[in-house]
Length: 161
Image (tube, rainbow, N blue to C red; front, side, top):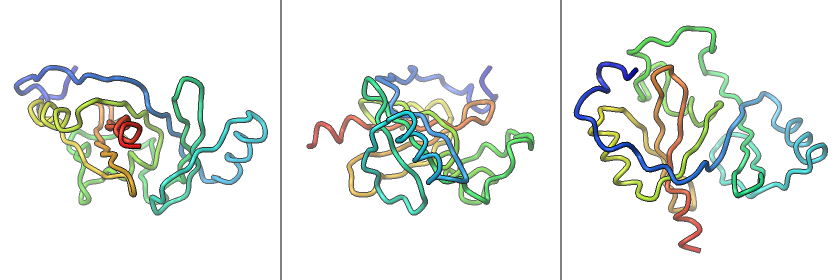
């Protein structure tokens, strides 16, 4: 089930602690924000300035829901994704920002450096981003079908506060 380049020396699987958030992209951040606050009653959360629109909400059990402004440069989902397009690079068709700014799930890990090492050993390309104003490091990867996954040390913020 793994793409051939990912079948290299298999490292121990990642140790996922929790789901951190679920994200949905939209052309109408304001409209969805009103729906989730006024209809569903979700409490808003503070959101760092990523340079694009969005809103964050609290869900039960510490999981968050993120609304993200759709990236107008993202290729249509209906276009098939080829193996060589899964590269996470600013020169590739699907750079890391297309994960951050589209539907994805985010998973929490305890040790971000160990996670980087394991992904590297498995031959899985990833992009790195630091959340502005926080010690949180985000890693962005694609699964074999081209779905974006965010992996981060999200608990580090709680422990440093």
